[in-house]
Image (cartoon, rainbow, N blue to C red; front, side):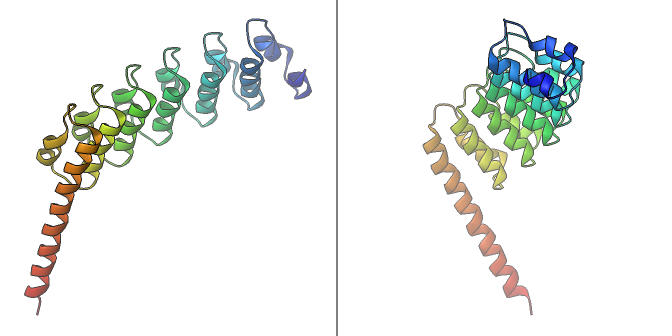
Length: 198
C-alpha cells in the first residue's frame, strides 16, 4: 500500500509483495525503489537470505554512488551488516579495490575490518597495513600497531611489539615508550638547531 501511495509501479511493488519477506525486508526493498534505484540494483539485495540490516547496507551503497563492481565485494550473506558497512565505507572514502580487498574477508570481524580500513584512510602504506591485517590480532591489538605507524614509529620499532602473544595493554605501553623516545629526540634536535641559528 505504501509503495503504491508513493507512486511505485506494479512491477516494482511485485518485487517485494511476497510472503517470503519480513516487513523489514519489504521496507528495505521499497525504499530502494523510492530512492530511484534501478530494478537491477534492487534485485542485487531483494533476496530472502539477506536480513533487513544487510539490505540496508547494500541499498545505501548504491544510493551513495558505488558501482555494481564495488557493491559486489560485500553482497555476500556470510558478511554481517557491520562488516558490509565497513567495506562500503572504505569505497566511499575512495579506497581502491586492492585496499578494500585486504580486509573484505569473512574471517575478520567488523571491528578488525574497521582498524584495517582506518589504516588506509590515515595514509598508511600497503606494507604497513599488512603488518596488522592478520586474523591472529584482535581489533585492539590492530589499533595499537596502526597508531604506532601513524605516530611515526619505524617498522623495526613496531615489530618489537606487533606480536599476538602480547595483550593490547602491553602493546600500548611499548608503543608509548617508543613515542616518548621519539618526542625527546625531536625536541633535542629542535634545541640544537635553535642554538646553531645566529
